[in-house]
Image 1 (cartoon, rainbow, N blue to C red):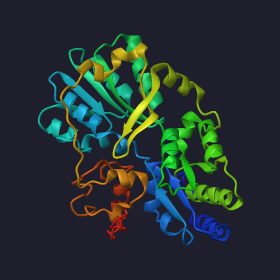
Image 2 (tube, one colour):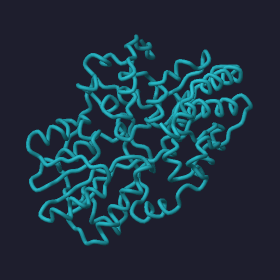
Image 3 (cartoon, rainbow, N blue to C red):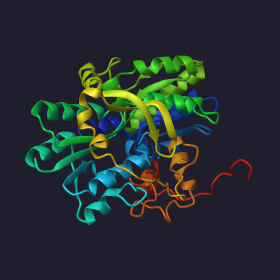
Image 4 (cartoon, rainbow, N blue to C red):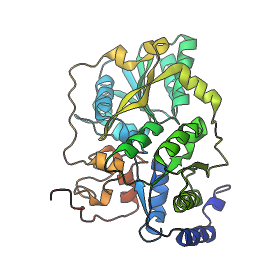
Length: 371
């Protein structure tokens, strides 16, 4: 608990809550765009301790959850092919595709492995030159540098049996898409500290200015989040709209420039589909032409795949924060961490899993327009 206990001090938490109650004079809606932050908010009950009328909207901050169904189906198709070793992080193995998940492929004899870093996948390729090793690369800007380094390492070593199935997404375009929505209710954002550790916060400054919305770069511990909410509330109360940094122990304005250079060398920006949300322009990364030889989609060219979302899963509404998990008809009954209908109940950063693990009970769904 060293270096963590001070960020979980209940006395300081009560002081921050008292200051927040004294600061907020009206209802405010603040969105966190990070699954780790969502889990802390829900697990600690912070979202239920806020002043009356103030609410947290849980945004699309889980990278596993926003990975599009078509990409999951491609991974399942590739993993089932003979001579292929498909590697990824543990959460991805249980994400439902149209016709099953990666764990099902492994149960049927496919070589599907959990790795802790993409460099582990490169080492698997080195040890098994007779196999095609694929790393399923998902995540926000946080994981992009490590995935870029894996491609660079494979290229430098001449490892031609390694490739990546890229499904990277970017936070700023998602924030812009939320703000552009006619149904938007978000008045301020908590930005993910780990993303900003890599990228800094310069990308958020034009968003804050153009949309007149406060954005606070925030950490992941209870006191981080309470202070971030307080900082955002102060801005809202004073009519300010700036980018502020609560996570000063980790984040600089310009971020990690070396990591950014590696990402720019290997990846370029592209449009990207988000599961349950749809396409967001300029919201993803794909390999540059220089490293296209490492693109698993080109190498395996899956053909004839048809995708179909589970009609009982409302992942899109959950990810946009328009509906709470407890308002889903399947929550806690047909959809649980053991029997998930969608990615938000699978991932360790998923909103549905956060609510279920915290023991939140189902509640009536809000009436929809026309009902």
